Image (cartoon, rainbow, N blue to C red; front, top):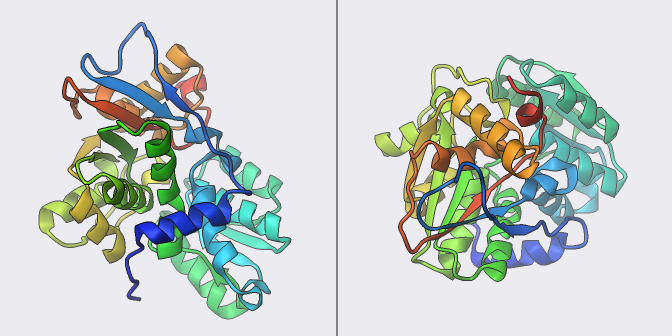
Length: 319
């Protein structure tokens, strides 16, 4: 399916649409630490792990659901998710008073499945990876007339995620760098679109698992590629491919994508908890890991915003 690219106007409309249903999460200028995140430049956190449902995904899911006509919602919502997008869809369905079915891969952590059910969703644990779960979700939508919400390749979802950039640049207009984790690419493609529409000089940097490097490999190839397999244990970043809409936005607006090991993301999650009491999942700690490892580097005059995009216990309980 071919989608038109969202615009800054779409992002502003999304922010107005979802404002009453989401939290404007804190923008924190980080202070002294035992181990610094970067020896040069200034670094802020956007604490999106405090968002409704525990991640940024509530923004895109709610924007999509609120944009659908009532008849499209009559049979509920369905999606496939490694957990966070499913939680966003479950939240959107709860607000609308309609059912939600979330298909999650067998690798999804038990605490995510339990949280989905607490939001009232019907959870189907099927498929070894997200792509397999997604086919099952799309089949369910076709058979039962449910509204399917893609986690990253829908313009309305992308516009919803992009509202993060509006808040970042309102709270810290002198931001020169934004760092985001990449799974399928919905977050970084939206944030990059909006941020660079406001300030074309801003640099958007991404991080992706070594074991799920679809966007990194697609950029090197010059077109979207599908990985033969994913080996990362970070289920929320375990997409085998990105989609053309995300690839086009990323190629046009993202300056660099670095690859991280799972252990590097784990170490960053533990660092976030030790230094700041932030309980981030591995994908939520990935952007910080880009700086901690030195794989992403700042300039002396940079002010960087690191997106702590999802909550989880990994940094608290360890490996």
